[in-house]
Image 1 (cartoon, rainbow, N blue to C red):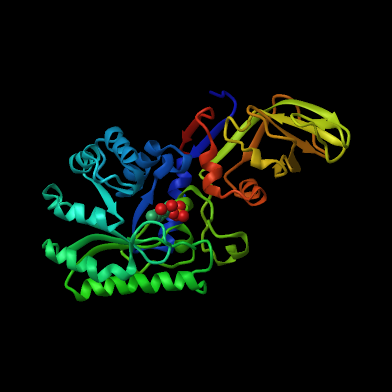
Image 2: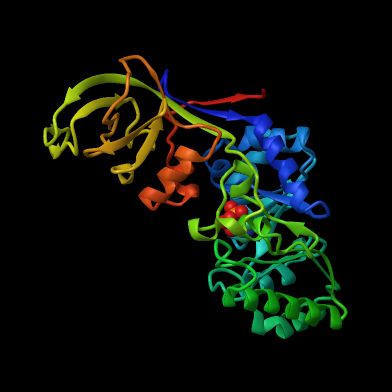
Length: 374
Ligand SMILES: Cc1ncc(COP(=O)(O)O)c(C=O)c1O
């Protein structure tokens, strides 16, 4: 465990982001996506704050194990949990967890739907159905909506508890992108087929962050934000002008400078002896790929105390080299990789061609998480 490198998570900024979300979507219920340890921010503290302080009542996980952890570690929480991808409905152990802990499996294929409808233990359990409206990942194909209706009727089901689908291209324009338009149309058709057949839909959702940021998907009862709640936009750089998002990064990542030295242009640096791109000064920082500071960040620019540095040479397991043409820094100085503004964070993502989701999730348990409310 590091002592002077840490990921600081300011929960007041999660509250701020939630208020920004409510400005865009004042009338929608929020199903907050907290899979993958709340996108690397620590699922339990994030959910505790989101539920008890912000009043969020629905959370999305990827696996039964994640959902069970929430139930076990927050036993006094009065919230719903959905399991979205690794549902494993036919496993006896998983089935018992769904039933005993009130965890809702998202049914995303017809064999799971058959199993769910035929199993008497699920007879009174809420049915959540995911349709594939064009993403071609999980979900029952939209062209099978009539068959789904038939199955529901055969089993005396008159309602779908939550009907949902997911966009493949929400980081692209919602208004003009052909696939986004098609997916919206397909979802509308599915809803009409169900409603016209007398199946009522209690809740529906389609919008993830990129969609919500553009003010789309708000005609459904629910929205399903993930990334935006942690701060970043998920729109590609060339489309960011379309975003209404004003959120802030809830995390900052800081470390310390553990060595500095002057260097000449062309001098070898670290493993692989990469030539230094100029004359200046190197700061060795106490974060490497063993902490989640990825080898992909080689070449990325990071602003430190007003000077732009560049990650040079290969990132090591425990440290990385940052080159500055100028700058006054010393061993023991604090080095902020990213703060609550998106400046360094966006640079890291854009220049390393890494998605923000992955930059967060890269961080390993060696970097302690510190929670505060300012
Ligand atoms: C089904 C589903 N809904 C919502 C989300 C949230 O997406 P985002 O983090 O882009 O908001 C995800 C994330 O992958 C998802 O798989």
